[in-house]
Length: 263
Image (cartoon, rainbow, N blue to C red; front, side, top):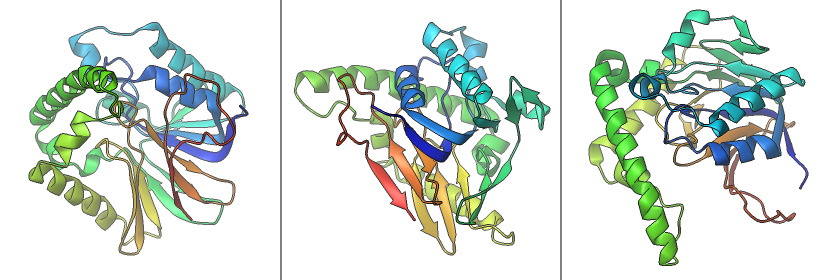
């Protein structure tokens, strides 16, 4: 299969250094998708997890090598740190191995739309004001992801859909979490209303989304922990939300990952 080629790709919340990172799916995505510009939209390395337990398997190292290789071979790679790798924010505008660190950026699409690119924890009141609570919530989320591994095996045994996400299910069954996601989206969009922008591209809450809020586009990249999603820009400026699944069998032309298109 030939690689998909895009003008821009956005990925976030990889959580390298955490047992929850789906590095095999991420490597598959990086292998089959190329772009002129690649945004790493925060929580790329999970220093919270690494501070508790040193976990760095070979495939996590391969991800770093793959990103560095892309940066060396004509892909402009921009690293926008998040709250799990917030210590990298001290190096705003530094260049490491051809990867540029920026705390935020303005991206202009091929059709002239301007987007603020940020991780998004800046607009999460819990992450900003109650970091201890955010860390407890992160551990609870990790626990759900851990349980989900076993649920997927069981569901596969019974012939059910194996990509079920327990964490996502809980998110949309708990009213307060649904309200939090809505408030988070509204909070980010409200900050750009007085700026000459068409929308925002962020991550942080592990909930991939593309939707219109008033006159602005709210776009969330999702993650490579449970949903394995990315945002891509075609050369005409069209944006897509891509749900990537690792293919064990050789791919054929009509075997295309699910996408959501926003022209």
